[in-house]
Amino acid sequence: MAKEPQELKWIENLLPEGGYRRRGMFGGFGYYVDDKIVLLIFESEGGSRTYKKKTYNFDLWNGCMFPVDHELQEKALQQCPFLVPHPILPKWLYLPLHTENFDDLVEEVITRVFRPNSFWGSIPKPKGKKNSTKKSKSIDDGISVKMDTRRPRMFSDEPAEDVLAKATKISDLKNLGATAEKSFHQAGIKTPKQFFALGWKKTLLKLAAVNKKNLHAIYGYALIGALTNKEFNMITEDEKQQAREFTKAVREAEKAKSKAKPNATVKKKTKKR
Image 1 (cartoon, rainbow, N blue to C red):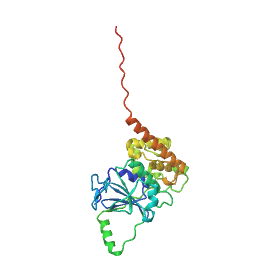
Image 2: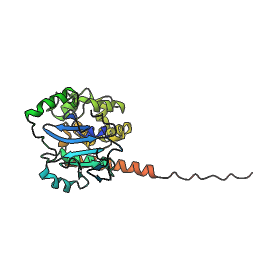
Image 3: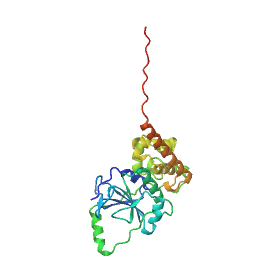
Image 4: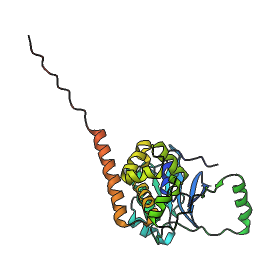
């Protein structure tokens, strides 16, 4: 049975909250949006690196896979050359966990996955009757997990100003469900009014202070969308660019700060009396 993700749990925050299903698969989890499987996550640190007598320089089951139909893989690899066909499941493209800049690369791919008319993702072929019994059994055994997709929709189609005026809790807003609301509360943001007053940048910094994994561009998209009553992938390209540049600048500033050497202390000479 698949184990709950730990180190890679944050990647679920990049998916449309309440808009995906999760199912146990190959010891990890597959993530479905509508009819498409768009992502697989595996955690197996120090696992096998060998398949059919060939040894690879990465763990075979420790990272993310991105399904793409075979005829579109070449196009996908042109867009994201850092991906590789998985040695065992070559129809899916793999990003090992210890790839340099793993977090940023995951964000880049998932951003592409949720663009309008995206070719990323794959619709599984329907199984015959022979496999239907087995499928039902796996669901009964708890291997298939349907995420709780319930979230307030009472403001979904209203103008942004009306939504902001009526919202009484964080989860009333577009893109922000129960999980996001919990993170907001941990960051000291209890009400929509506090969120509106802070704006998306200061809010994102507070969320990142609680959990560094919150500092990614797609979370920025979600916050901007919440303030404008738009789905996170439907905000303007300028707004997306602002989110990317802001999160990148903050990460670079943090890296520079961590690398900076402490200033040498200068001893003051005491005057002799």
